[in-house]
Image 1 (cartoon, one colour):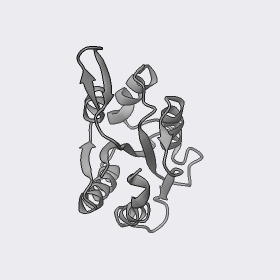
Image 2 (cartoon, one colour; image 1 turned 45 degrees about the horizontal axis):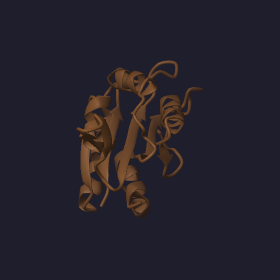
Image 3 (cartoon, rainbow, N blue to C red; image 1 turned 90 degrees about the horizontal axis):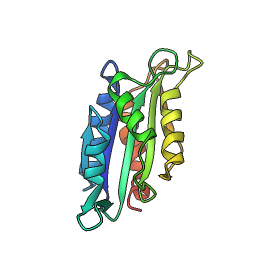
Image 4 (cartoon, rainbow, N blue to C red; image 1 turned 120 degrees about the horizontal axis):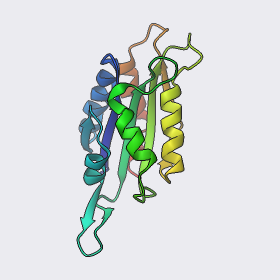
Length: 165
């Protein structure tokens, strides 16, 4: 199965619950899952790749590396504080990420014109770094009466075949 890194951006903790619900479902599907509540790019790259000591470069350690981004948007379209350094490091990263596939879950409130902007921006950044988007951004609108944990688990289950790329 896939090696999956769940990368969480959350200000108030609600997105952490969504990420943990995804982790639970992925574990039930026999995936190897690491969740990053305080995402550190070096740690995530270390979990995704192994270092080739001869060339001093990272090489793919898993046949199917997948990153799942779970993030909210804060303020006027900003990233949550806990993921800002990850985004900054990713922006300047020169690691070949073309073997990484990803999907993004955005949590937001459609009453704001910046609805899920952080998730959209991070999706675009990952694509610009060569990562392959598995499925289009999934958004959950918290202005509706929904249970995002349950909906995210259903969405992961529905798309589980895409995670075994």
